Length: 232
Length: 302
Image (cartoon, rainbow over all chains, first blue to last red; front, side, top):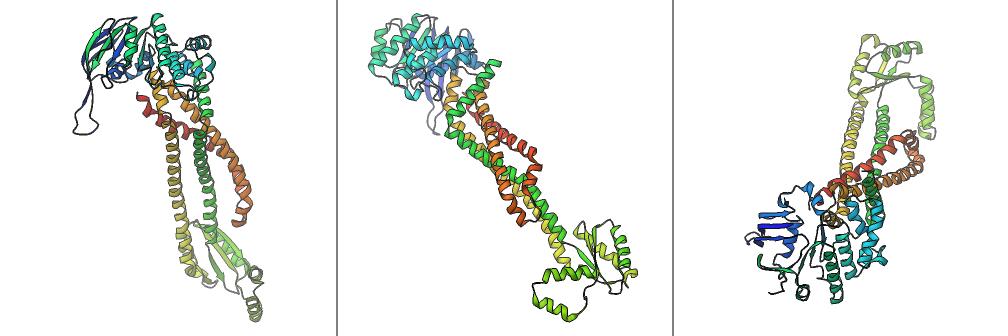
């Protein structure tokens, strides 16, 4: 479903004379449909950059990235929305639309894909119920707790039934209770058949999942194991 | 397509309402700009009125000898009127000149006493001549240098008035040029201020635009609500400006009329009402939409 082929990503130095930063260094791997993958590594290991390449928020310096056979590193800007509608994204800082209510944040994605008003009014309450935000439909993000914000972010990522969900440190800002809640939610989504890529540096979560683990260090894949563990 | 447009309009309206302070700031700047542009539009007529009034003050007088009769002067007037450079000729009889003098100086005892001491009517009959342009007065005076007029004309006061006439005409040209330059500078400044205010308002939404891009919204779907918001701001600002402008014109009209006799600014406003309505509403909408479109372009590259 997703394939990285000798991908390198470097960022130019912000100060002249300094060396360029190598975020990913010649990495190759694939993700099959329906997989649950944990991307682990220290801060700065390249996890977020890797997810950004799938979302085409960044483009590789070298190598190729494929999404369903399409070489997305060459995708034209006008074709980007079409690709992103196949992907759901959950971010550590939630990235919610501050001027929209809980309901509107989720409905926005359905409006983007051109769903009818009937579909929106049928699906949005259902998803909000799944993530436990049924009572918060008219609240704005600023009125939600961190855990609620992340659940809203997940509701938004899954409302349009994407092919894959990319979760970048979704529990980074949460307490242990909310962390467990979010992981349970992600597992539920995965069980419904969605491919899931989870970037995290939470050892307990990774070890409890018993799913495929790709370990990154200094931009290189140092380990890729089925039913892997967090080893650094 | 219809459903997308409906969503864009709905979203634009909601953003406008929820933006509160920022929307109010944008409207305030737009109102200022629209007000300025409308004022310049009306000032164009005010300055035209002032220039015309000034030009009307510039004339030359040809004084006729005491023994020349009214009929002879009127024949001369007829001839002068046919000269292309002449805009207007007014005959002022000796009696009219005396009457005007008494009317103007009746409260000045010294002047009135001198007049009684001289006795009779010391004033000469004259023709007051106005030309189209300052340079044309010498051609008109040239006409009186003809020997046929030697026995008729006592004096021409052109040479005494020449510097004043030329100053008036050059001032009117200067007024015109300065008015145009000042208007252009003011309009450009106002447009830049509006553009920057809208830009700052959109900068505030840059993170939101980025998120919309990441969840797969097309550029049109993102840009649409901002343009609708601009449209609403422009429309509301145009209508508020119109209301304020009407009130200001109505309130200031008697005062302006007092200073510039015969100039009724409220009548001018009513006469140009529909042009002003269109000017204000279109200026508002055009400025807000163009500024939004330019400002948002930068943030759509994620």
